[in-house]
Amino acid sequence: MDELTTLCRVIEAKSFSRAAETLGLTQPAVSMQIKALEEAYGAELLHRSGFEILPTEVGRLVYEYACQILRLYEESQQQVQSLSGRLAGSLWIGASSGPGEGLLPVLLGKFKQEHPAIRVGLRVGDSREILEAVFSRQLELGFVGRLRRDRHLTFEPFLNDQLVLVAPASHPWARVRTIPYEELLTAPLILQQQGSGATSVLQDALREQGLSLRELNVVMELGLQESAKAAVQAGFGVTLISRLGVREELETGKLVEIDVEGFALRRQIYVCYNRSAPLSSLAQTFLDFANQAKGGASGG
Image (cartoon, rainbow, N blue to C red):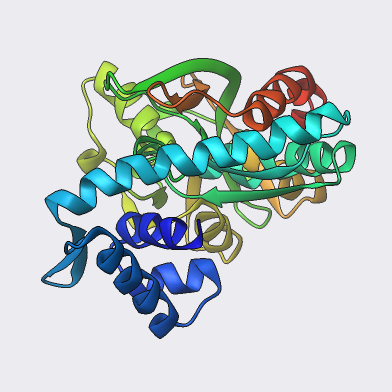
């Protein structure tokens, strides 16, 4: 079972070293487990292509079966625990920076309190990265702010979110709190990277106005939401950001919300899962819990 897990992690990470880090093993230990599997199957399972480790044709076949075996093993553990009336096992989910830095940590914490025998993990990235991880079955659930046309993925509406314009408390806008739409076009703007749900929503809104990002005064394009918030607090510009991820800064006065006349950005947060892999009982239980608890956790 450990060797199959290792194979899956190497293929998903495309790297022995990253897989070793994820598994808490040394790189030689990972290599030995892969070698043992290759000897058992009598075939090469992996090969190097440039800087990446990729599966051979046999490796892809074994990977598909390994994923099924590991899911069934995890499911059997959960079912055995359910006979005693308690949940157990591991749950790994992902989220884009809006829900991932505000809402999901609270929901996971409360869920863990109710089910202390489980292990939970949250991976935060941009929407595109999280969807890829759900597609490749590295994650069971993904909470994202954008859709992707993919017959392998199922999307369900989860929560309404609003993008808000925020500025540091020292900014001149902090005194007026409302600006005309035209001022936004010339303001030094800090954006999250391409692929984020927030940037996609902004692009769509600009397109409706016959504009594009090129016509804004974009001074920085940063990775995750936390980086954008830090840059704004340091006085380098303003940003459009998920209300879910900026509540604490607004409440403490570190940042100030600015209304833009005639410019309101709302978006849907979706929960996504791989339709070719039925949700484990643990994932389904968490999803049911999250749908019930999301209002209180989001402050809505």
